[in-house]
Amino acid sequence: MLNSQHFIVLSFIFFIFAIIQVCLIKICAMKIKNTILLLMLCSLPFCAFADTPIDTLALKIHYATEYIETTNQVGFPAIDRQVLEIGNHSSKYYSELTAIYQNTIDSMRKAKVDIEIFVDYVQNTDKGQTYQIYKNYPQDGQLTWNGSFYEKIFFGYEENLPTIEWEFLEGDTTIIGYPCKKAKGTLRGTDWTVWYAIDLPYSDGPWKLCGLPGVILKATESRGCFNFTAIGIETAKEIVPIIHEKRKYQKTTPLLYQKELYIFWDNQKGYINQHILGDFNSKRDKIRLVPYLIEKYE
Image (tube, rainbow, N blue to C red; front, side):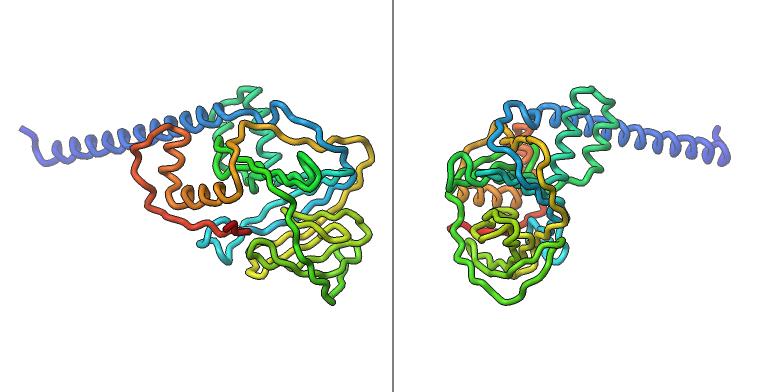
């Protein structure tokens, strides 16, 4: 017969055993999750598998960027470091943070690093926005947009360079040593105030902004949710190509991509399960978000 002391000891042993089982289950689940993440990431194409030089670099401008992606982020913008590469006839705009992240991921894949190191880097590294914008490419007067809102789901579209009716304003200033003039204009429903440097005679700027007699070094939109400020400029001292990065993009239009954004943010879990895992029976995401658009296509 068990006395009370034996019963207490056995209960304590069973309790400890139960805790150990729970911990082992959690560890196994984490390893399975990390393995799935690794398999998903390893299935992604390398960043540049058929890159095309489109121009030769003349000027490289670094921007500190603030942006939001969904309405619940208003007042709490994300931070990015972005780059404008200007050539003789074309330009490229992209996130420096994302470029560094992607190059590191590619190197880690090739080196076949340990899964724990790989997953830790993926989960704990800051990434910026995932688009690239090419102005006057593939032809003069055209703009090419390539990007994604989730790993492995890439989109691309072409459109005409935007025509912005700029209004010149009082309010000259100096940005990173360059005298700048002030202007304002509207692009697809978003009002912009910008400062451009006439000493940098390129009709270009961050994101899709362009059309002034000098590079735009600072741009703020009226809602305060998107801001670009130049923090550094490099003049090319050797021949460096501007590269168009090739991927297997789903060809789309700006309006169709905008609709896809709404679908994604409304049900991220379901969208990812369908497009990444091929699971069309997953439950919808409990968190429903609304994209906050930098421009709106009608």
